[in-house]
Amino acid sequence: MYDTTYLRAASLAQAVDWLREHEEARPLSGGMTLIPTLKQRLAAPSHLIDLTRIDELRGIEVRGDTLHVGALMKHAEVAASAVVREAIPALAHLASVIADPQVRNRGTMGGSVANNDPAADYPSAVLALNAHVITSSQRRIPADDYFIDTFETALEADELVTAIEFAIPRRAAYAKYRHPASGYAVTGVFIAQYDDAVRVAVTGAGASVFRWFDAETALQQDLSEAALASLWIDRDMLPDDANASASYRAHLIETYTRRALQALLAS
Image 1: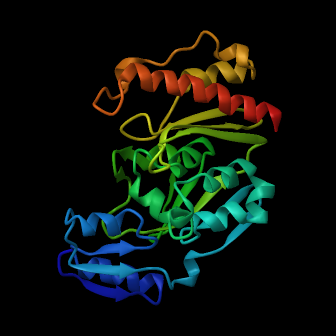
Image 2: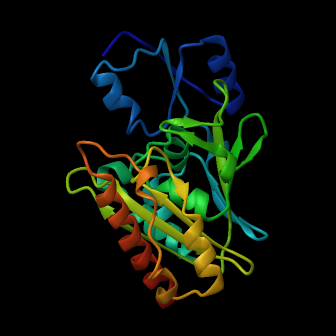
């Protein structure tokens, strides 16, 4: 690792002030991506700003028709939360299959959403559940506007994710094909059914999480496996590289959309 200065913020305001003061600083929550990057000398932040003692970034509660999850809530806490299991069982399930136990007990929802790794699980839930990303500058960024590209989001340089607010669906489901070593999503599909819409989000198979609009339209008209039978995803929009061909990625998306729908219909 390169030399860096460690700072532990006592409040959200202090963390934001330090980010503004030190242009090359990086926030640290779970560190599941940042620490390995530092160890490989792929990043050299001047300061690490530890957020883990900021109580205002924690908490899980239902607020009206939304589920509010603080950015510092760990994956294992989301998976075990009775509030999450009652409001959105599929979100608890998603959290329970992230990576491995070590990652689930250190990684945070806010860190994952802020990082926007193309193989991360949470972005699919944020997008399918029509969530808003709440930030330290009091912005409420709709999920459709938040995810930009690989490791790129609508966050400003001095802006932190403070919470995620999920619109509670009638029912939802998540299915993924896990990478055998890392547990990351080679392909993950999250389907959420609302009174007036069905949303389908795909992670792991592209440069960033995305909605499969054709599947949404078909399922809004007929929420059944038959509605997916004639659908196929455009191979030209998918990466074709050493890890997987575009055709294979498309096959996984189509397969795991069916599996997510089967889980949703059984719920």
